[in-house]
Image (cartoon, rainbow, N blue to C red; front, side, top):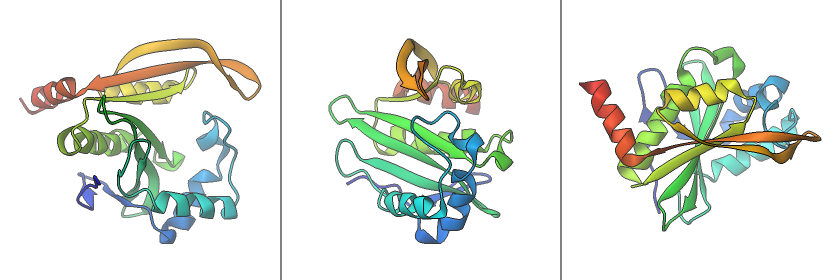
Length: 190
């Protein structure tokens, strides 16, 4: 089993497992249409749907087997403002997929970048991943910019590769390798 030492602290954030006490904060962003706009099959959630989501996320506190998801609450002094996750895609290839969501009231401050950076650090440094990738809708410019800020390169644009709300949509795939992540960190420190 692989689990971060909790909490993970950054300059402005605390990353920790989700708990049922986070329901009000999680529902505050999950109920918003602008949060689920680019999520496949997602609609704004009712409080009961958010409760089910929080219960599921609360069990995602470690990576036990390939396919597991590690979901961490992104907390500030104001409460939980979002979540970041790593999905363990391949044990053999040491690969995981990054995901993130931040309440729109906190967009534009670099908090998603800060949270994702902390999770990538753990994924590469502690968990021993070789490659981390992330995907987004081809028109989700904010998510694509975030992945680029993390140092991820765009590896693919899958043209009209999936049905999204009744229309064919493009998928963007970004990724970064462990040695690229470490080189980026060394450059930032130097």
